[in-house]
Image 1 (cartoon, helix red, strand yellow):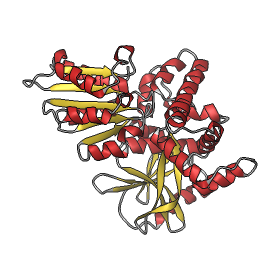
Image 2 (tube, one colour; image 1 turned 45 degrees about the vertical axis):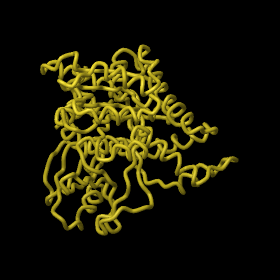
Image 3 (cartoon, one colour; image 1 turned 135 degrees about the horizontal axis):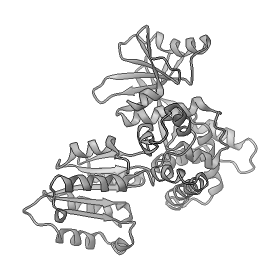
Image 4 (cartoon, one colour; image 1 turned 60 degrees about the vertical axis):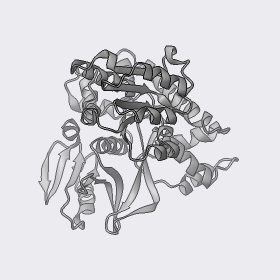
Length: 400
């Protein structure tokens, strides 16, 4: 089992803090495994098994817990007032009125509460309003490249491993399965895709036209790293179709995709005007292997956009808000607003060995007058400083 240190370190810092720890993310990204690993750490640190309540609501023995009051009473039976207790509720959104359960447990001063859920419904407006200022969300994704390398210790050539990473799946179980059978990985990913699209989206929002749902997600998977808007998505999909998709339908579906964590959006930020722009944004797919389910994947095609997808999620993991940037007529791949109000700028290119590409990537930085760090990430092997711009090999950067 790979230790998800990025997320475990956050849980350690939040231990015994009077705040609900809400772990979210797409299905099969490792939320349950993370809770299990943290539970083991608590036991190793001396916390008694009696002081830990761990319930996974996808398990058969917990299926009867549908009423939140019955479940609350069952949990409270195990809790006395003399000790601290750690309560883990895995896939809590499967419980009716789970918001009331969470709130009722939170007010107990000796309960440290951890909950997980597979979609943003867990943090819907109702729950967010109920728990305002009382929870912190930890969003978990499939393996980073550093974790992927740990899971593939037999492959010593990190450049060859990275080529595999940007073309295959990094879901934890998919990585394990791939070491036995690549064909089974496709079946596994198809199951995840179908579950998210049909169960988490179509069923929940009572959508009848599944065909259009697939068409839109396929378009977005194929447009990773490109600017899109509801208008241009509708125009493109309506070109050769008898059944038209409306602008408003696209807007709703985009929201559904991000709420299910299959896609993440990067809004456009005007660096000079210091404001978010309402037109155009980019979308990134949570797992590049999922693209292979709906698009024709050629290992040596679209490498620049795949690389950009990897960098987006690494920046997301490292903290801060990630935007795509605009400065006058130039585009910056990523602007990261850090929690301490510092900022970082990133350009991403597969290679800048030819002069034309190099000048294009560097010129985007030239007129930004502030002193915040500027990085050029490529697969070239040199790590150099060019007029204050730090050029880094992206594999080295990912393994830091």
